[in-house]
Amino acid sequence: MNSKRRKSSNKGKAPFRHKKSLGQNFLCDDAIIEAIVDSTEADDRTLVVEIGPGEGALTTKLVERAGRVAAIELDDRLIPILHTMFALHDNFRLIHEDILQVDLAALTEEEMREHGLEHLAVVGNLPYYITTPIIMHLLEAELPYRSITVMMQKEVGERLLAEPGTRLAGAITHAVHYHCEVSKVCDVPRTAFNPPPKVDSMVLRLNRREHPPIETADADFYFRCVKAGYALRRKTLPNALAAMEGVTREQIGRALEEANIDASRRAETLSMEEFARLADCLREE
Ligand code: SAM
Image (tube, rainbow, N blue to C red):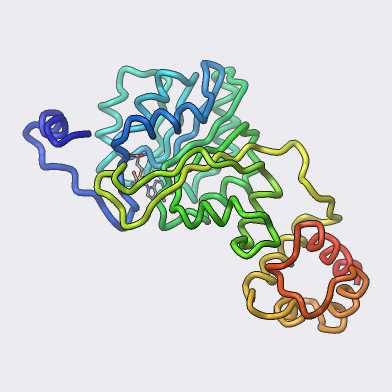
């Protein structure tokens, strides 16, 4: 939004002071806004859950296109602004809460059932200080989404796009690839925001998989192993996994041998299949 328009819409009011602590960098590039909204593929049978609507840059387009929009915003000061902006849209619901505290499964189930909606899309220009917790919160809620379209810091986007078992991957890469197919929507320069952040950004689309790409006897145990492995990613697997509760070094040694994985390797070199094999062998110990 240019400063002239901002001035006239805020007539008589103090200008909005962006809070750095809440990751408030608002989008002001129409082409990027369009690309994000298009990526949701929202239609009148779709519920869109938006994380952090801010001053409504994405929301304005979403309410025109989706069956319903449930937007979750933490900042008290934005609540009256958003209520006023969307007062004439009866397909808009504002939830004034911390996204990490919202029971997303209950919210989406209720909204879809009450309004007869068939599809779910999640979207957000994320507050970067909690990108990873938000993505984990979304994945762990096991929602029936078709896609999650999220803006994040470029380096985090590259981590999520990386193949597990390659240098850029992290524990979150395993979680995301287990649940979703990941693709890049676009790169976003810092000039697309007001105020501009100190980093470049990237929009990713995560399409929910019907089935995970690997088989494992116990997905929770697989993720415990992945987390332990990456928590000490510079250490070899025996040293990193030894930090797991209830697991002995002898058991780790036998599991590595049975899974045919060299004990000198580090977690970051293991593919998802190898991690699954190792987790299954360790679980059997
Ligand atoms: N969607 C808007 C846009 O693209 O212009 C704003 C995006 S801004 C990067 C992130 C938004 O998330 C802000 O509105 C901020 O207040 C909100 N936010 C920050 N922490 C939050 C939290 N824990 N739960 C919900 N919203 C949060």
